[in-house]
Amino acid sequence: MFYEFKGKKLKKISFNKIKRNNIVIGYISLDILEKIYLKLNIDKNIIDLCNNSNKYLKNISLIEDNLYFDIINIRDNENIKNNLGKIGILIKNNLYLIIIIEDNNLYINNIIEDIFNSSNYLSSFDIIISKFIDKAVLNSFNKIEYFDKKIINIENEIFKKNFVTNLNPLIFSIKKELNLYKLYFDYILNFINDFKINFEGKLKYINHIENKVSKLDNNIEYLIESCIHLREIYQSTIDFYQNRIIKTLTLLTTIFLPLSLITGWYGMNFEHMPEIHSKYSYPIITFISLIILVGLIIVFKKKKII
Image (cartoon, rainbow, N blue to C red):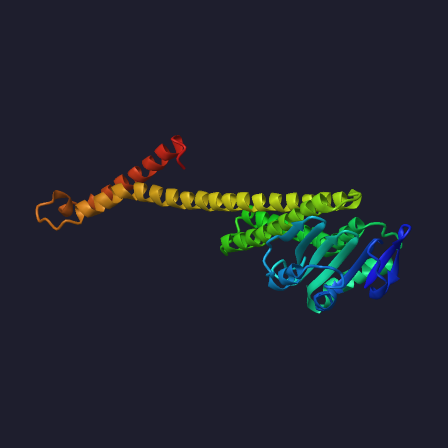
């Protein structure tokens, strides 16, 4: 689909009516580009880049005299691991072209058609690319809110001392997913930066979109730091309660150690132990044990150990 600028509006034209001196904007699939690239005076290197590009978040660009080409992978805002497709952005002289390289479930095609069909004011390629990034990327604010609530819920679990399940795997999985969002937004920001350098025209709209993506990127970075602090708080809380348990066991051991000594002492089966034949031996030893027990408790309380 090709459009020619008429004033500040776009007029749909056929491929055969494209004139080199007029500013033309279009979006086509890679299959169609392979059939007409010679007529558009496009180098075959562009086709090769489109066919050989992978799904990883790695910026692939080609910059020459009067030529700028870049590829963007589009990810699912709800599940950043899912790849929805990829497009190529081509600027050559007066030709501004969006190449749909890969499109799962026509996601990208529907976005582009919606931009061209629903907007009466598309005065530059800058606006079209800005609208595309806005629709394809910037719905992630809802996901950020979701992660924020999830982190707050984990904090509440920690403060409630609810350690029935190990929270470390959950915190780690959230941080891992946030890192993927961070990588994706950095990738989009790199594309915007390359586009701004190579686009000759007003950058009002793309600058606005760049600010939005930067805010998303900063929010994600804040959530990643929150996950790191959350894990530290969780580990510190566990260590604190484990230390309390160890302290309690140590106090019990210390208190009953003298009693164990007395028990072991009088558990010896020697024949000539005078206490064995006394009828008051048992109550006396019991009384002494109680005195020792109470005395140790009083000492520990004064020392503020218990």
